[in-house]
Length: 162
Image 1: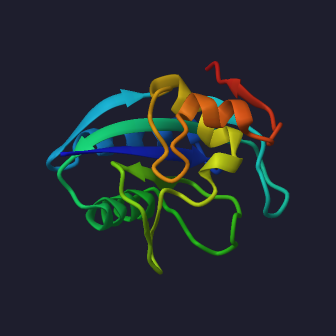
Image 2: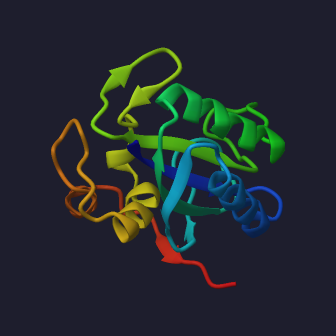
């Protein structure tokens, strides 16, 4: 079994309901156990075109699925939520990113681990540090908390209240 960390985001439609459904789907993945799910955070979009704020979260899974199998499941969940890949870094109903998978380091056309931009994004690091502050980033050797402390991104990331 491997420890996998992921980031979730939504800024189209009913963001809250979309993330709740995504959590339910993640909890029902085969050979996978949800270990933690962060609070929801309202975040400013980073990069890409002008768009609405996101709701973001992070989750920690224990899984025997391979990184590629996990990514395939994430794409199924995104597609079922109406995800369309029209504009790079554009608005989306649901975005699931595999951040870390154990200590795996890989760079393939379809998947790079650890996620290449996770260390630059508060909307990823704040929720991740909430649920797994001691999770070690395989490339840097720094924990999620240390990465957050060093992050230069100063975008607004606030706990979402319903």
